[in-house]
Length: 270
Image (spheres, rainbow, N blue to C red):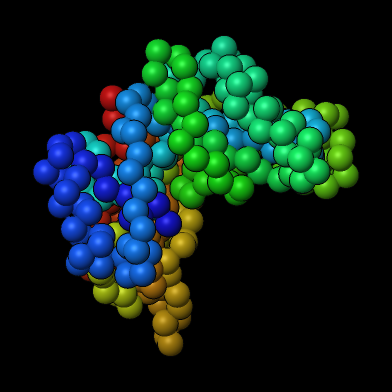
């Protein structure tokens, strides 16, 4: 869920993090072991591709905002917002990612006798136009999926069937060039402890061209939408420019209210 990672700027904070995990046991038995990793410098980016086990088809890239508070402060979360396409992404960077990271992975799995069919989501750090792989996921990211799929103008089923039937090399998806942006509304206290069951008001006031994805909600006994998780809603809009999409999202997110709601105000703010 994107949680359990402590970014330690100093040795002191690193030692505090070890104590938090292994002595205070904030992550339970998951804290029996820890992994100490290099702090990669650069800009974070999510690169998505699908493969039928032989061919690899890149999808639209996105940028995810993991930390809970503005200016990338606070603990990691499952993602507090995202936008697509990434402003620093170029076709040249895409070719480097495909040729040095994604395609070699697919080839290696086939050579091992374990050909992979499905989505490959590469979490990357990019510095000086050189990507480094942080992790793989075998799914579309969340909240990146909510800003990628609205940009797909052709049929998603064509991509799915290309993966399943092994003819992905014949699929040519069409993407909207307009950017898409999404902001997550979360419960107060998330990613730590939080309360649920609060009524959500204002959903009916959101503009028609804006999409509200529900993730942590449920229907109450009287049919009212209630909070039911840490990340509650993702408000998404497209625009002729990234700034236009951003303005659309934030002007509509302010129409939605629930107790202790929190969200970042700096998604795609440069």
